[in-house]
Image 1 (cartoon, rainbow, N blue to C red):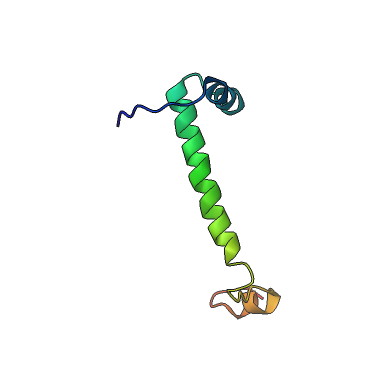
Image 2: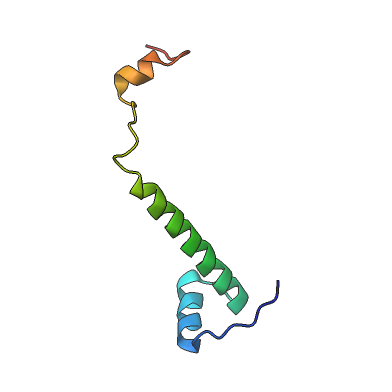
Length: 68
């Protein structure tokens, strides 16, 4: 999809340098992918402590097919 946007030249150059991309398109794509991944990770971290996870040694040994 083609989209026209205004991005400060110094910002796009920095993104290209950090991401080691050769084109502005690739730099924007990488930046957007990283942004989405970061937001998803933050959402997962928001659940920390809210979901009980029974993953200790005794829980693992109780699973069907587990060795022990």
